[in-house]
Amino acid sequence: MTAQAAQGAARSAVQGATPTAAETQPLVLSAAREGVTILTLNHPAKRNALSRPMLEMLRAELKRAAEDPQVRALILAANGPVFSSGHDLKEVVGADTGAIAQLLNLCTEVMEGVRLHPKPVIAQVHALASAAGCQLVASCDLVVASSDAQFQTPGVKIGLFCSTPMIPLSRAVA
View 1 (cartoon, rainbow, N blue to C red):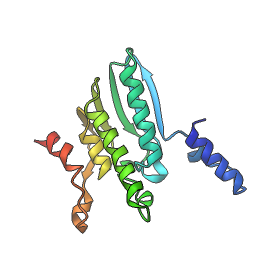
View 2: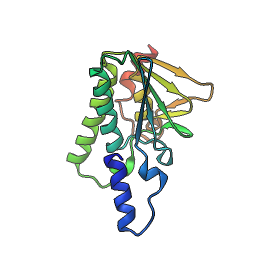
View 3: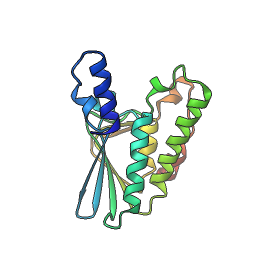
């Protein structure tokens, strides 16, 4: 059981409830086959939002794959109806600027870890990749998208545009 799953189970036990399947599953699944590591975002109930725990797990898995000589390539995939909705905004609302800066620095570290990874990183996108989720996809070396895949940076519509997704997006589209 991962630390995140253990925390969810402990939280449910304290509240007197049985842990849900989502609370006992890792946020990022890792599977290896014939030199390819598949990292799967695994929190469909939260639309695979890039929460701090998910970003930390992605960072650790990227580092592990970089150091493993058996790994020749990585695939980033996702479970559920959304590839990733972007940041978990519940972590941002009401947080102090220091906590927000730490979260954004962690996100930058993960995106750069994908972009500069010593092995090819392929995004397998089956559905919506929004905001930082779109940035994650655009940071990959190659994107394989189904006909149902959608990509968006919705902050533009409400005047809250974050420029960071546009940097890898412009590199990928240019």
